[in-house]
Image 1 (tube, chains in turn purple, blue):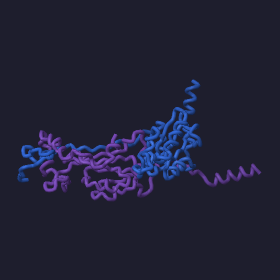
Image 2: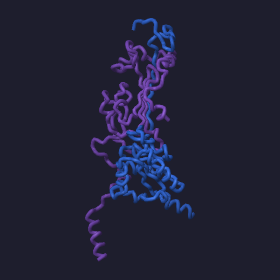
Image 3: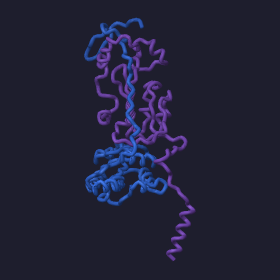
Image 4: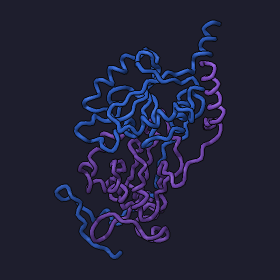
Length: 174
Length: 178
């Protein structure tokens, strides 16, 4: 009886064949439309903060360092890879890559931080982004040939001395 | 010699204990998927055990909740001394989508010290195997922080001589031609 059952088991095993995937030795292809780690392209980003408004995990933080520089920070730690940031981005600056091997021993490895230069609207005083890279160079305020006036950055802090816009910056920053 | 032999033989066989402290079971299914014949990790010596007293590695899924944080801490304390903690999934790494809910304490590193993070919602079984391989020192980690800095320095749009401080605000007095 037991010999017969063993034989039957052997037959079943032979019929099933080998199912173990050769993952660690060979790379495993990801399925189509796979959403991995989002990659932020700083050259395309206009700093509209639509991704920060639409992130369900609220982990894309946008705050203004001074009047001219806006910082977009992606923390990466509680990202669910839903892809809504890539959907709402008007400039397609966010792409969902195929990287999934994101294991790390330091959680800050997953973060991405972009410094975006924003120019100031002469009427409303808010930041905006110029239309094209050449327009940025034409604009007053985006020429790098006047380095001694860099102290204006410190002066611009006078506008924004209050707390940053998003509340949990103090907790989440390393 | 005996010690070296033992280290060579037993050094890389991890016994894992699988602790869910309030996740949605997505990461549990992926962890169990790793143990199935498809991603057979028992060929690397990794084995699932039922008690934290037998375990070398604790796989944490789900955020630390107000109700389960104490139990997670007790399970961590029950593990024998050379121990590792893996945070698997977005909830365990950073608190998940409901990180600021009233019942969620936050990521599991609020309660137990975490050694390795495997983000994903849920992470693929391959990603979990990769994380274990990073922990064993077989491969290097692939991710690194990305930082983009502007190199151009902005110049003043307003001339500094035309600005004066008034009640903590900067007032621009003369509008020049732009």
